[in-house]
Image (cartoon, rainbow, N blue to C red):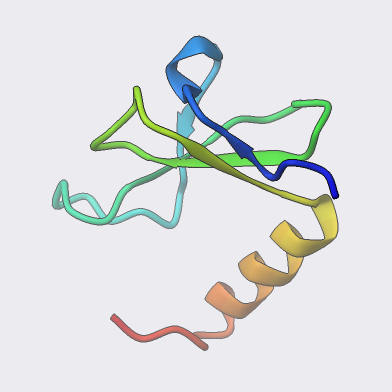
Length: 73
């Protein structure tokens, strides 16, 4: 099984805030584009912490569900 996390995500450069994160400073995700293992995602409040790596298909499914309003806060 392939490891689907990056323990120290701060070592990677090029993170961007997800366009679906709120502007209130609470629920903020950062995404790293063009990573060879998939789509790394981390919590912007803990940039030195871990990142979860989604497959391209998994990330697309997640974004589709967010756009469809399938998640409630």
